[in-house]
Image (cartoon, rainbow, N blue to C red; front, side, top):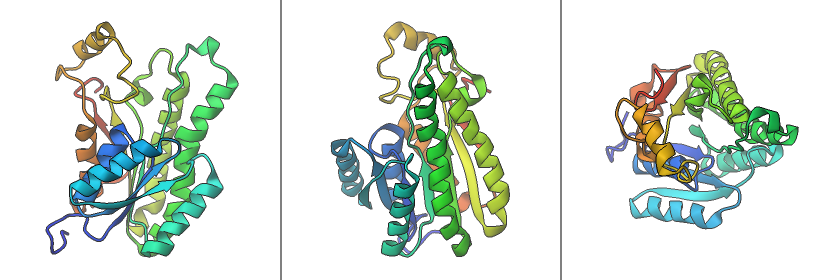
Length: 253
């Protein structure tokens, strides 16, 4: 339920991985606007993460930067333990950190596969593994794992990325079954073609081809995704778990 201020996440503690730019930034800002104290995770781009924090604070939110690599299990464990020691709990985990290293399959090196899996899939495992023990003790928690439209549709040149994001769906559904009895909801959000740093390099011709396949005839924005995430971690979604919510304008149905 909403707190005295009318904010749906008042008093909640949230962690957004990969929160320095794009979808992660929009999600961090949205959660903070709803009242959650939001930890913004980043690895390298401190300037961008600081900008996210400034935007968040300028809109009346509260948060802090938290630097660690999601692929490093010890760093993840130490960081999430630090959150609970400082704030007494962790309520919301948004697993957004990810990379894409595209190439046709026959030219994809094993090292590329390992790097994508380490961040996109193992990173989700690491963060969930560290956060869930606290959520289970609290008997309340919300986990949102960012997957992708290509996890279900596939895409040329994105075998590694698609496989890593498909793995997140299986992880989400299995974890939802395990944690449901402890009132911890686990869902996945699958963005489609969203205007982020990952898509900005696509030329106008390529962009037009994609847009022509989208029934809504437009690309999505990070805010389109952030609104869905904010709903899923709120009390309004207390009976939703184990689901994959597609935010793609109808690109894939």
